[in-house]
Amino acid sequence: QVQLVQSGAEVKKPGASVKVSCKASGYTFTSYDINWVRQATGQGLEWMGWMNPNSGNTGYAQKFQGRVTMTRNTSISTAYMELSSLRSEDTAVYYCARGFSGGINDYWGQGTLVTVSS
Amino acid sequence: DIVMTQSPDSLAVSLGERATINCKSSQSVLYSSNNKNYLAWYQQKPGQPPKLLIYWASTRESGVPDRFSGSGSGTDFTLTISSLQAEDVAVYYCQQYYSTPRPITFGQGTRLEIK
Image 1 (cartoon, chains in turn red, purple):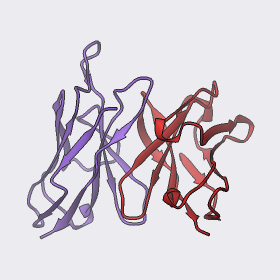
Image 2: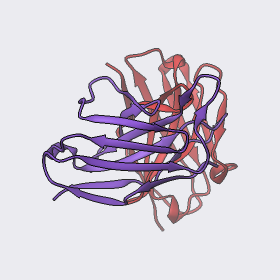
Image 3: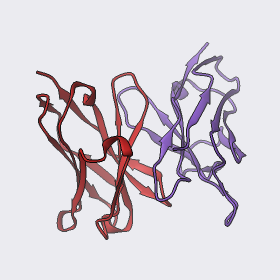
Image 4: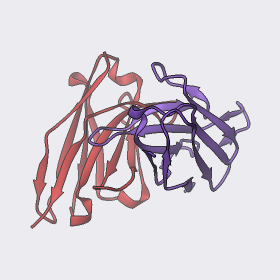
């Protein structure tokens, strides 16, 4: 069965970086996009960007341009999202999701809580 | 970016009754070349990731109960739950994926509760 398993919760200080992993199984990793979406506590869903695991091509929401980097390691079917220059407003649950047809997200990871606090 | 606006923000419906959630996009998400609306609906329960319910505005994802249906075209869309069950209590989000190469945008969410 399709699964996306994310890395565990992180606590970071302002100005630091965080790297969240998303390990895919149950399907061909390079055949579907990976989207990253975040959700602050009690808030809605916010798309951060996407990656094509086959080509490595990426696209980022303008809000995160210059601070986010999405990469992958195809040999272990794992996608990564790194966010730098963290601030308190980046405290949120970060999700990876398998995407097709330009943005239909049919399987989601369990989420990774990133807390930014001094 | 395409802005997605849902209404209402919250909704209370009696068990067995119909629930209707609306979603409006700031520009059409109907792609004329294939006549498809690039609109999806998700359900999110507390402490869980979102779950895909509907895509292409009206195609039900495999395993989703048939009491869930999607309709609409262009800029106005509706998610209908024909007979509300207790397990349908959740927040519902619409999302457009029309923009190319991206970005994807979500509505602000509609909280559905039992009356």
